[in-house]
Image (tube, rainbow, N blue to C red):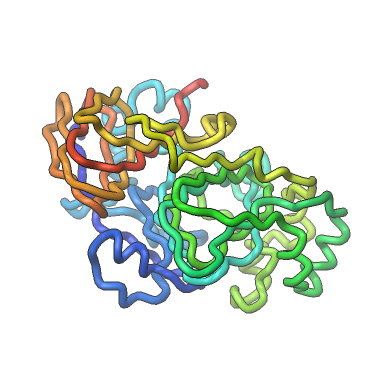
Length: 336
């Protein structure tokens, strides 16, 4: 595979409301009240599902199957040496139409031990839109919380205590938040993000009441006593994991704190008037404007606001040009 591919919306059903901002970006009907997540270039399924969540290519094949059939073309030999036939990345558009529950994600080691997965779920949020009077996010505990106290909150479903213990940070477009595995967090109503994450669907939801159908869906079948072993109960300074890039004018702006590069890379691209890009498996989210993507071996595409593109490694050197604002999402550099 050498050609870049424009992907349609892929919005698996979720338990929380949202999706209007995704529809507005894509220029589509916003009638789906429970379509708050658009899984872009996804080779990942919803937890416990066989195919739900997977992206399809225009020829009808699942992207997952196409990558497995020819991983070096899609991903490059160095990536395959490091990660086999996994893209190592899941990108989402996430539009929180209501506050998300307090939850956290497992590390690689915990996921290997309890979910038979090489990947945990470290993630990051690129804030691309906000609405309402007070859009904010909740990354990490303000002060250390004893694990026994968290366990009591979970048993009692003390939502006020859980949320009140977290940092509460107002956000605007151009803010970017890195969420390492184990960090408790929530996204507030009215926050629209491009989310990068490791390619799993492991969410350990400690605030499950009024969100999930049962506590089992909160601990994913391993029990809360076990799940809470993966929780980071230390104090977190939110400024250590947030970057603010709205005022930066460079044609390429790195969006995330340096520690995120172990898991994924994210840049904002604004060609001036064109921009050359090295070969890589890449997901583009076009936020604004119109322009062109040309590649060394795979032809090109016309780009416009709302497009989501997957670019194979074998397309070679690429060039984007035009009046465009793009979020470029890539897996980590192999071996970095």
